[in-house]
Length: 311
Length: 289
Image (cartoon, rainbow over all chains, first blue to last red; front, top):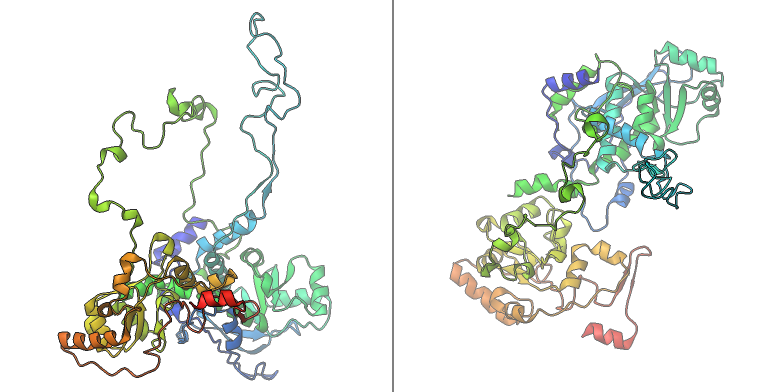
């Protein structure tokens, strides 16, 4: 199945190069998110289009590097739009429309990056506790068990030689071993963008205004999830770790509903749950952080493209 | 990276494929699993062959070729390469590249463009520990160079000087010693060390001639001589020398200074955003000399 997926994507003649940035990414150093919401019954959700505050963005930039001052908005065709839904009743109501940046939510579904991230998340915390003793560590075995010659037996220097029963292990596992390693920053950022894009493309990403539930009844929450055909397992993501009490109480009863703040968003958890439900605030935060992360190496990363232009 | 159309196609394909989950992804180009030398076919000599120094882990020294005269002895020394590992390098920056940097706002033409500004653009890197003592400006693109800039480099040919001055700018060749260079190449890293700004050393004996010569616009040369040479150069190459007004184009560093606005001996504290000056009279005198 997995190879088929790769072949299918490849056969559509996609060219995947390394993560050196093309011209479009150069312009994402300052990114603005367009939030155009049309009010229906519940009224407007946002009055103004929130942009990335320049002050906050400036504070990340190294003081002595001059950041790129131009920005180019993504092409209208690439921008993604999602409905903002309600959580206050099982019936689905569309409260507005949210526009998502294509670099984060419509990136190429780089499965190798997703795999790398999943593997990294599994392996970096893995500790292999297997340990064996060598012939020097096994208790005893200091004395020559019998004389060199004359016994008719094989010569031996120690009863703990690896040839002997109960002897040491020659090339066995040696003590606790960690499999810790750090995946590169660009691979982690790319994995997050790829996973979000995959979720959105497969209709598994939903945006809600907030996570306020009318009651703490887990049954009602399950009814809401089932009626909207959200997958058996749902991951609710908010921008803070203090979630509404009703949701916390309800989700606590259901093992396959998970709550996560934005700072805990990771590829493994997103893939483990079938459906991803984000609040508008969470979407804004994720977008802001990922766009900044994508462009943080711009001045050096663009070197490889700009320098070739210079020649 | 795939084009936008390719990306859209891939994402549209995903709609018809099963949900991407933990149990159906693997790497398209996995590393081959390591095969241990165990068992009936991997055992016995375990890949080491029969006998010999390799099987006994008693390897010969690096470069040994079994008794044949090794490559590193066979090849003779050549005089032109004598001391090559000690020679100083000046990585080139062409006028074309400089013009493009100014036009694309990678470098600020309103201030002096010195080593730090070129490094800060992110397009050029200087490694002082590899005997790179600064940048030299090459004449590629000198015909299209039009921006008046205040340039400070470590080496420039006569034609480059003419091109820069014809455009209405000024050029100076200045020397930075190793300690000053390391501060200039990455100022933020240097300030984080918490070390006072060093006093820039004077050029060594074989470079003094170049940096005191007005014809090469040396920073130690007499300014009046430099002005005279600007005129003669304009006459030689046949262009009209534009007037250079007092301002950003004429600001110069003191021969002992590394950063504008900061004197040697001062200590920059980035965390508390403070600059500390020297109080001790002896130290102050040393740094100011």
